[in-house]
Length: 193
Image (cartoon, rainbow, N blue to C red; front, side, top):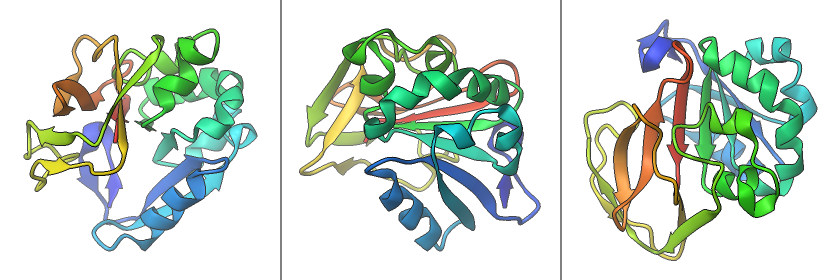
């Protein structure tokens, strides 16, 4: 079903996902649409389809992380930020800190405001760490056990998680899966793997 406020399931409807896509996001769209555990309806979008905010009402959540589209973040971040803080959901994936942070120029403050880790810093990562699940009862990590992320990088924020955010998993002691509540109603997730 759709994710309601603060991750509550509801309605048995499909979860409508917009995946900000450039060179790498199509794989995320395919994987979500092929999933059998949840009923996802994922579509690829570019920045102009996220701004203005009215376009966002067609979705339950927006996924960010395709670093090949980093230059678009600044253009749609204000609309996305307002939508998330008003109750929308956002998932930032690995390489979002690289894209939105100081490694690529001026940090994008509106992205930092909705992702539950500090994205304004330079990015950091671990290669092939074990992802240590700290809370296997939270809906984001429910049923997962710790596992090795072999042959891949896990990005993390050198600035750490935001105040009030909940760290659900770490990689080499760094916050790698983090959830938070942007504004008073929003839902924000950071997935470093």
